Length: 38
Image (cartoon, rainbow, N blue to C red; front, top):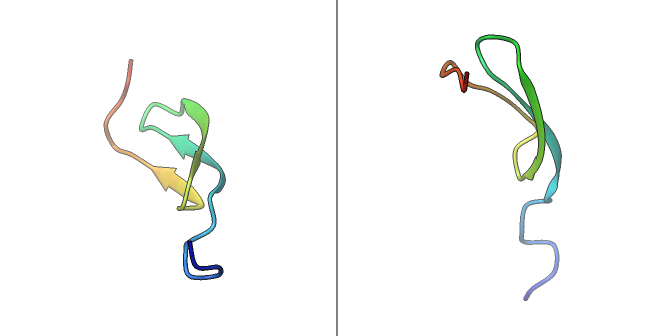
């Protein structure tokens, strides 16, 4: 793989509409979804 052409893979927080938070890894920083998982 070539160096410095891929986006960074970092820890991120996903927040759903009800306020629940999930920690995961992604190339995006913080995500907010309008679909509730509960």
